[in-house]
Length: 109
Length: 114
Image (cartoon, rainbow over all chains, first blue to last red; front, side, top):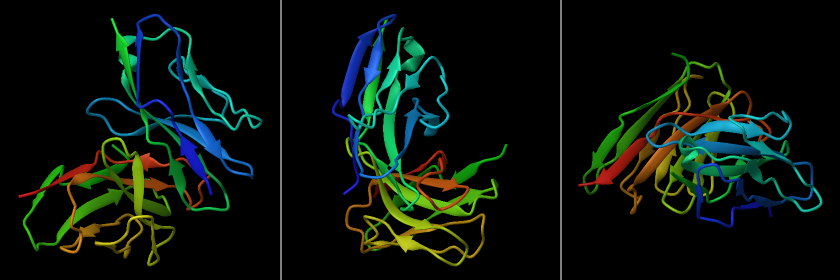
């Protein structure tokens, strides 16, 4: 079965420290992986997807098929990064996105 | 401002009452989705529609109903059969109904019981 696991419900780091939000997935085929972010009082929005290989707001995520992971990283956290982050798995053989439970990121000043 | 519009922002339901949540998109997307968001549980799919006049149940469809008569509209009815309707409801759309496409979200509707 397809599954996405975000092991941390809450992650708290100091401003300027590196951030890594973990995402592990289970799927035997070729996955499409996404990170979504929900800032306070804003709508859920796409942060990045693995096929674009972009860096958005300083965040990057690399798909590691061997470890079935898609961790989100940022070298220096900023206070405005505080938000809820969701990892999602999609496949072209399925019409759904499979969502992780989310990680709440708090950046302390 | 293009995108997805959900209304109302807040909704209250009385016992035994059906309520309908509105979702409209002007992105010309074929696929639309309804999710329920509860604290600590992420997003759970209620219904999805790949094209007009077609929709499928998601993981938690019991107590909910939808229609897709127009491409831009996908209303969700929370029926009295849904015994625990208090939640945040999110509508989304994507260019096609495959999991490989990113989804765009509305601002959500918060439903509470009176």
